[in-house]
Length: 107
Image (cartoon, rainbow, N blue to C red; front, side):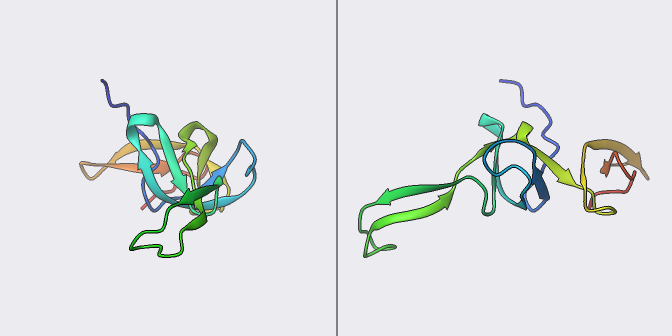
């Protein structure tokens, strides 16, 4: 299976451009490469029914984030705080990500 380059990484702030949470922003908690999905803080909340265990002695229904397809999110431009596409360029022999809108480097 070929691993295509995902331009979004854990810790990035992203804008949701499709789905029920369209227009919201959040921090990427996890990137699921095999399924091309990202888990974003506070986005795509689902109710999970859990049995009582050591971690949750009470059990019951827990709200938690579910994955959202990576094509439905855009990186937030560090310069303008607006959604942008991501490109790569070489700086001092190192490959770095940059925001296409402002040209500014993404950490």
